[in-house]
Amino acid sequence: MVGAFLLINFLFNWNNFIMPQVILQDETKFPLAVAIAQLRGTYNTDYALISAGTIVSILPVMILFLVLQREFISGLTSGAVKG
Image 1 (cartoon, rainbow, N blue to C red):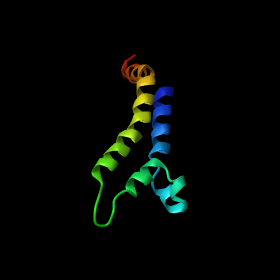
Image 2 (image 1 turned 30 degrees about the vertical axis):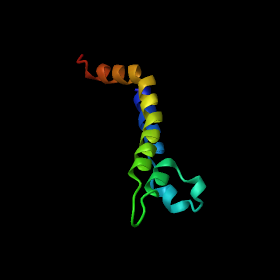
Image 3 (image 1 turned 45 degrees about the horizontal axis):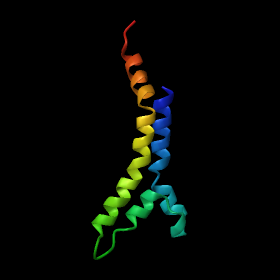
Image 4 (image 1 turned 90 degrees about the vertical axis):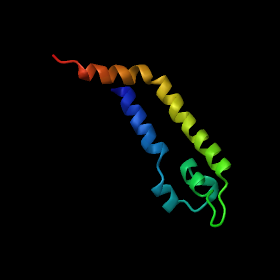
């Protein structure tokens, strides 16, 4: 249960998009999700750079899931046992 809570809480904060985009004015302080969204241009889009940024943004979440995988799966299976 703790692993699932940590993973969900981390994902909520990691994927926060709207508030930083509205509040922050300095591009150097943008979170990764907002910075990746800013890479799209009006007339051209560098898909290779967006793909690289997406892979970099996925890595911490994947590492956290792999570290907490045992607790996450045990929490799911313990709730499924009847009686």
